[in-house]
Image (cartoon, rainbow, N blue to C red):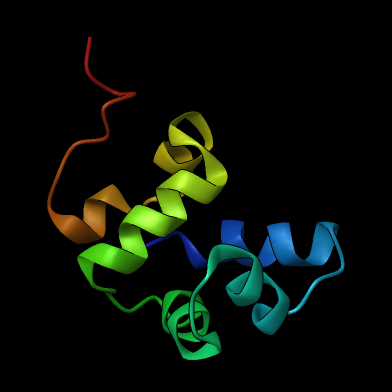
Length: 77
């Protein structure tokens, strides 16, 4: 999974938290959040924790579907 880095960074900025704090809250390593912030792919466990933390409705907006070669479920009609 890859995320839209600008949306994840905006979340961190809005709530004035660091990657380390988000990682702790999600039960991940800081390096996992930094990987997301660099626009790189993460493993399935990290993806699951990300979706669980943000909830499916918000996570689906933050996932970089184009980078995954997939169409966003929100675009299907």
